[in-house]
Length: 216
Ligand SMILES: CC(C)(COP(=O)(O)OP(=O)(O)OC[C@H]1O[C@@H](n2cnc3c(N)ncnc32)[C@H](O)[C@@H]1OP(=O)(O)O)[C@@H](O)C(=O)NCCC(=O)NCCS
Image (cartoon, rainbow, N blue to C red; front, side):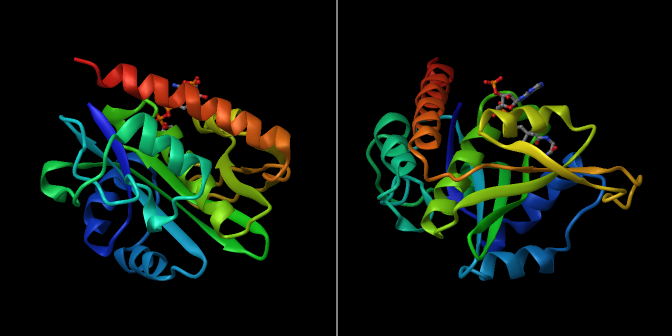
């Protein structure tokens, strides 16, 4: 199976909500998603799609949203994973298997949501989306990333720890469904040579993993 990333569009929202319902106990309305997708000034939302064959029919930027080809992730994804781009692939043949997003205020990129279809978890898709979102954080001139995560959500915490997030605080009874606390996890500056080197290393490993998985 091949996985690739595209910008979320309004038509994706029902598919995104289907994954959301399997991933979270509370959900956003379709209107909330549409509003976020339209707010291109400060928001970036992406979907991960699956393809049974090499996704040769991707947008010109190699599947990375918004035609930003200057980021290191864009370059790597184009050359290592996706091959030569051509035209857009119809959604019907490439189902959405994950989604995520962030919004930026001042110099802070807030990861608002990220989820992978349960049957596609553990294959690098969550990491692929987080990588894309980090690239968007650079594009939007963010200095650091932050998010909230349930105290009990160790899987997501591991993903965030891997990408330099650290626990910097908590919000008491943040989640209204069960009154669970949230951990606030944030990165230091994403512009330091150390952070960029770690990011590059993680990306190389991720693409090697995704390439290995795609072999028959
Ligand atoms: C969190 C989530 C997005 C991860 O996506 P995924 O595609 O399954 O994860 P990946 O395969 O990309 O794994 C990336 C990293 O996540 C962590 N991770 C993934 N699955 C894990 C597991 N079962 N146990 C512990 N860590 C895990 C690891 O750090 C992993 O890196 P590694 O492979 O080098 O160990 C996914 O589990 C999910 O959708 N969960 C439900 C929604 C959710 O909780 N979202 C986060 C809200 S804050």
